[in-house]
Length: 522
Image (cartoon, rainbow, N blue to C red; front, top):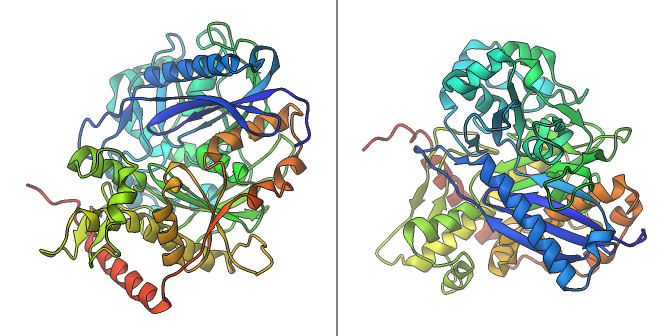
C-alpha cells in the first residue's frame, strides 16, 4: 500500500473484550493486546457492562500493545499517526458531565428489559412497530439505544435527577470513550459517528442529524445527545493521563460498519461477521433500500465530512458465538470455544437435531421477542457431538435466512466478481477460524464463502478510517487492492441440493417452535 511510513492504532471495543492493534503502512498488525471484561446478568434477559471497567480495559490494551511493539523494535512512539475506534453498537450509557461517572451500568445491545416499553409504544403510536422506520430505518425493538435510554429515564432516579439539573449526557460506547479520551470533565468532546448514531433510532438516515420529530415523540431531551460526525475525520486529540497523549482520534465506526470497510465492501458486496452475534451487511450504494423482509436499513459508512454516504441492508442475529459460550460456560459440554469444531466433526450430521438459540428472542428476519431457545429432534441416539454440530448449524441457518431476505429486498445478489459470476459471501470474526463452521455455511447457502487471511477486519476497518483522515492511506489503496482476495480461503458447497432443501424445511419448523414461549414460568 502507498502511504507515508508509520503506524495507525485501532481500538476494537467488543461485547466481551477490548483490543488495541497497531498496523503498519502495509496494513499488517505489528502488535496487539486484548482484555476480557465482566458480563453482568442481573435478571433473566438483562445484560450489563461496567463503563469504568471498559475504560480501564482500553487504557491497559493501548499500554500493553505499545510495549509489545517497542519490544519488537517498532518505533511506535515516534511513528503513530492517529488512532481509529470501533465499538459494540447500541449499548447505552448515561453519565454525569460534572463528575464523569456513569449513572447506571451500560445496558448492552442484546439486553431485552425494554420489551414492555416497546409494546407500550407500539400500541400508542399510529405506525405501530414501524412508526419510525421512515426516518431511521429501524423498527421499535429492545435492540436499539432509544428504548434503553427511555428505560433509564423512567427507572433510574439518578438519571432523572441529572436530566433535570442539566448534568446528564447520553452516548453509546464510542461516545463514552471519546469523551473520556479527549478530556472527560475537563472539556471532553461529546460526539458520536453516523454509523453508531444510525443504531439509536434517533437519527434521520437521509439528513444524518437527530430527527426532531422522533426525539419529541419519545420525550428525549436534545441537549443530552452528542454531536454527529463522519466515520473518517480528525475528531480530537487524546488528553494527558492516557498512554498516547496528543495522538489524533481520526476514525470512528460501529463494529459491523468497520468490518464492511475492513473487507472493502463496495456497492453490491456483502459480508457476515461472526462474533457474539452474527451480522450480515450488504452495501446498497448511495440509495437507502427499504426492506420488506425483516431487514434493517442502515449505513455502510461515510468516509469524510463531505464524502458520499454508502447505505446498507443489515440482518442482525442476536446469538451466534454466544451459543458456543453457552455450551462452554453453562452446560460444560466443552472446556474452550475452539473445542467445538473437533467435537462436532465426530459426527457427519446432527442426527435430526435442530437447535434455535432464541435466548432473548429472535432478531432478523423474524423479529420475535416472544421467542425462546429450543432444541428439537432429540432421541436416545443423540449425543453431545450432535448437539455441538446443531449449534454450529444454527449459526449458519440464521445467516442463510438473512441472505435470503437480502436477495428479495435488493432484487439481485451482490457479487464479488471472480470471473464465474458467483455470489461470494465475505466472512470475518473470531468464529470464522472454525473450518467446519465455514464449510457448513457454504453447504447450507449453496454458494461459496470467502475468508480473508486477517479475519479480524473490524479493527482493520477502524484503522483504515483513521488512516484515510490523516492521509496515511488513500481510498484506492483500500478498495482497489487485489491482495486480500488473492490470499483468501474459499469454501465451496459440497451438499446435495435435495439434502439442503430438506434441512432448510426442518430448520423453519424448529424456528416456528420457538414462538410465543416468553411467558413460560416455573
